[in-house]
Image (cartoon, rainbow, N blue to C red; front, side, top):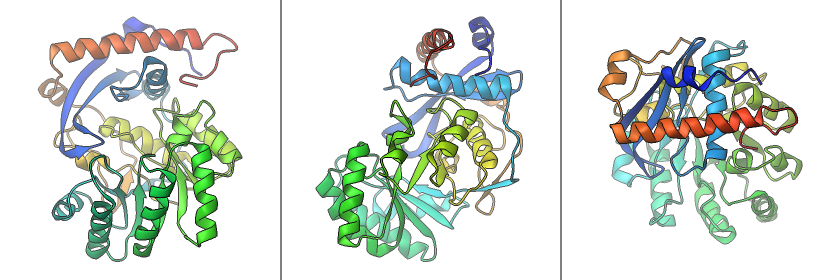
Length: 340
């Protein structure tokens, strides 16, 4: 890990913004983030508000890597991305898809609180109707029980699923579900997301044989270089995804995808299209289903226009301070990586 820059330097470069979304996603309607004007480029610190300081510290480590160390060398010049359909009602699916230039692969959110399996089936069926040739994925964010997951996958598999992302919670839960799916002949891959980024050991799911592939995100793994190491050691195919990042944070995700030795799946890096406002003058969205590796800078006028209210700015800067303190402590010899 590179030396941690002084707190005063980080705070002097910080800009807190509040960006509205086009549609509610993951329970969020306004995405707040801290943008850092680092010496190596712009970086983003935006852990979800419910995360504790220990978990959020990894996100700060990732931001400091991007802003003060920069990105590793790429091995490709473009990154394929998927469209993402939140848990909208069927009539809203076409409007959501129209905001994406990434129709070759679509991820559909399922298992939303307050909704039913019928809602999920309707949403997936509508995507398949609109895009009959697209690769189709679902993401349950660990919300299903074992029996709910089996029922849902049996109902959704006929629509041709590439994989199901974190259908149940925990590594043991994934392993049990995967075993039962094999017994029933359900030919749907299992992708681990929360069982990578929220585990003390992100490699445990691979050792347990509980997934066919892993989803990796730069912020919760503590940066691009650490994420590259996780993928290498896991020995499983990887899908790079975002955490509802602004254009600045999404560019870090693209840097990870561009640096991976192999990239067998389209990446979940298209969520900038869900924003009604952004910090970049030219939002970092796909063209022809691909992201290029152009430099992404935050625009000063947009930072000012979308500045968070004073109370929220103070909240975020205090959070940054607390996370910085944890990183300094964790940087001592023999300490674990941030958030793990």
